[in-house]
Image (cartoon, rainbow, N blue to C red):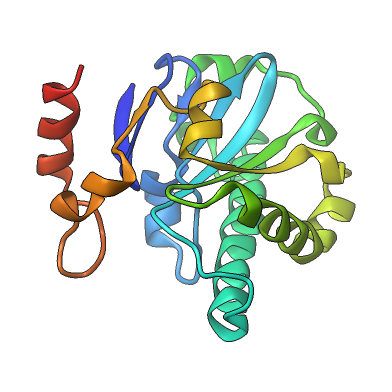
Length: 196
């Protein structure tokens, strides 16, 4: 499955990826925020969220709002995915999971939480990961995760770690951005097609 998000191209085997953000339970449940996807990567379940930008840590109000939003997405996604996997929402919801996630018998302490921020500079990543780990402290405890399971990438490190397969260079992002700041899906598809 291929999809485009935050000026990046993702590609995973269909049997490994669950687009939790697009699942009917995430869309129909009031107050639920979900990350982009849950995917099986090298025998690990990874929850992945992509953003086209993030506020600088010195812009405290916007930064705290951003971190709070990301925390909610991961907290809700962890709960929703595990409820679906444990058939709390019934057999039909369970069968929407791809086969490899249905079959995976992995303890939650092996789950990875990956935030990818396009255009984020290397020296900004450390402050962002520290803040995210503090914000997710309750989830770390609840799901028996390790702090080291929470990682933040920019587009370059995400490509190096095979989380994405391509990205729009920072200097070309504006040409694909809609007035609301989001990526124009059709223009992005065309851009990636033209640059393969």
